[in-house]
Length: 305
Length: 311
Image (cartoon, rainbow over all chains, first blue to last red; front, top):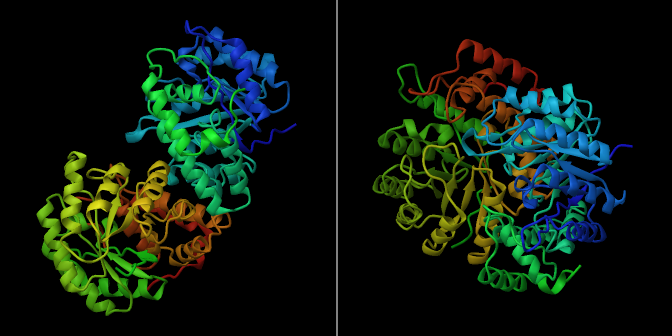
């Protein structure tokens, strides 16, 4: 059955115990919280989940917990981006075996890959699994990063029948349209999912939703925002977008340390952040509390689990 | 100050003869073409008009010529950008005296100064004139420094006639932050779409658009602009995709490391039957193979068949 991806999809953080070990029970609680608060899909482990600071064994364990906890209520996407392509293949095999619904992948990190290298990586990973595959467009400034041009997108859609969508983190009108104008016309229903909720800029151009940065704090706001977009209520959508953008400006520095800090104030503590990322200080957490209060989020969003 | 609203702004190219002098006869035709094909205002000489390759004297002469040719039919916004602050200030003052309707300035060219110096540069230009003042956030691969939300907010606070920011960097985060925070300081602060990508800026609450591609496809640009003005952003997707495909084809033509599109623009103008010469050196014109590739791409764009050919 084809998967429909739509709305603000939740990418849970990874709860850690005070000794920085993976908190499996906490993670199950986090996933369940998202599903109960309207997440149309669960995607893990993104950068927000400290993906590259988790061992491959921890990533597999977390994937199993996610699939088991969600229990078919919504689709589950497993992220296979790693430093080594062999690890990505391992995660892809595992995700299919445990019953995940789809795989999100990117060519291995910390290179400056040519288009041909990205093509080969994605084809190798995507033909290694029968799962539907999403790719992750992550262009940096000045030609660094992993950029899916219109040509690359076209070639991958031609080559891969299981290629169903793109997580787009370009956050750039021209770069977005390089992908959308090709993909949406070649493969109607191709899911373009924004990496953060920059949806007012992209929904009219064909983005179907986003992976969420702020859903662990403000799930009601996320859902209200997407409903406003679907209703073409641009005034309400602007109000929600600017609030979410404000939240993003608080969280984006040393992501996800501040986000995890703010979760304490929402009654959903998820522990520290693994090094080399810092853990939010008491002062930072207090500052975040005042901001959440000012934005009326403390008052209008769910407290506790 | 009565709020100046730019509307759909065309940004004419500058035509050159084979001896590299400005071809004023053709420039008059270009201006008439824009006025006949949907321009609410003109802005010149913008980067598409090769302002970097024009001398200070030529930029002044070009503006005076345009003002005379337009003769009040639409507002003419003057672009005054340079590396040195005093050069840009003097050109902006000249434009005001000559009768321009607004001043448009980039952050300083060439240098990469600290934020406080970028603010100083823009404040000195903006406060040297009484006209509505617009600052441009250029593409990231551009020739100088870029704006940040923080720089913009400081300019708003210090320049009473700062009307808005023209966004050509196309970054969602900048647009979201600059319009939401800018309007808090100045409720009539304008976000103007800078490079034919009107849907995103419009959805975020922007007004007006600078449209370089109106030189090639003015009907499409006008149609897209009108839909955005009615807030039909979802309905505008097809048109925006078409314009993005045209943008892509032009930017990919030529060997500019900046992908400035100047070679592609002049080649596309020739394809549409509006010969405007070649870009000025050091920009290389498109070679025969590139020109052929661009011609193939443009020929495959069905929407171009509805666009005016010739003058």
